[in-house]
Image (cartoon, rainbow, N blue to C red; front, side, top):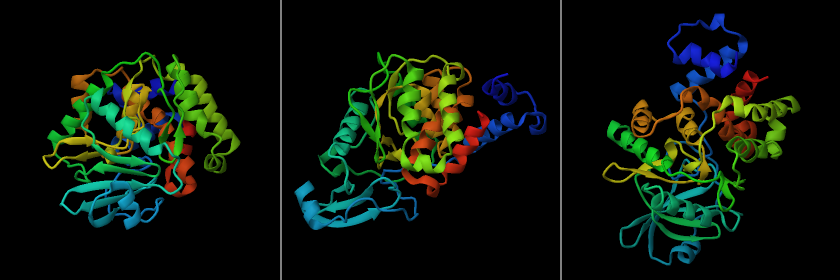
Length: 344
């Protein structure tokens, strides 16, 4: 019996099965699903201005008056570094007239990193109907955005509204998987070459592309990398055929902020045409989104049967990306190995 079918029988149909009665592989899969459900998975590569009170490494240059003057060309009253940015440095800037803006900077960034992000924000807003920050300025190594509340509230209304917004985004259908240009997830390229095959696209552009990243080679041994290749070969039996839809691409709680009135605003996209479930997997497995988010989503847009059981598998891309960025230091390496053991 397939692992996903076993997980479905044990967790989704209400059948009571003790862990001792399952094979080791099935026990590991159930443990992964429960961890996702509890929301204690490893967070994705953070690049937002969300302040989580933790100290994180800084990747951008100091926000000097010279830099601010060059990028914003306005009077700057105060600057405040925001924590939570693991892929970029993020600053809250108060202008001389009292307005606030968020400035993202990255030392040594590729010249089109922020142009791609700005385009993605515009696409989500224009084609997907999502609320996103207005882009005030963009250039090589910096992006200036309209500022919002840095934390998403915990109230039910906010998350139901967010769920409906994501469902509406995923209601925009595409003809192929990919995007008209390559993009970025954190500081690493996101390969978006066109494909008519969703399984092949996810395998080649979202999983296998990380196997040659130096940190992944250091963290995963040859047998573990071979397991990723076997998972890719099995994707057609593990994931049903689904259409390409417009996706945010880095959808987790940290990339949902709020207006002063408590409306959801979506930031830090890695836009492409992809499976809706791939977009949802980070929100499901990285923690923070309450059940009402998914309930509101499903009221607006149906999901394929067994979607919950596929969340850990589709989250594999985010785990690989995080390890590719930070190696053993980020905490995702253990989760990645745990997932791979299920498929050995």
